[in-house]
Length: 102
Image (cartoon, rainbow, N blue to C red; front, side, top):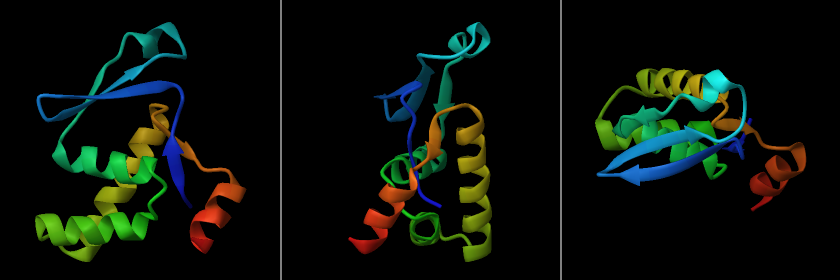
């Protein structure tokens, strides 16, 4: 499955950190600001750009020298959390097909 950035959040880089600010949703969500660490920021950026999660995990292996299993588990956890807070959403099927053909 491919993902894209949701229109419900804006992302900013402030002093090297990824900051996600909800702009739509419940009052509780609008009161939240999410700061991502370096690894989660990389996962967010790549997943939001439609990069397949297997490729994101391979990049974590190369960048942080973790095992492929650990990298994939981290990617899955971060993506799940980002979907939960509304920062990422599944890309429509036609986008996924176009990406796979590119």
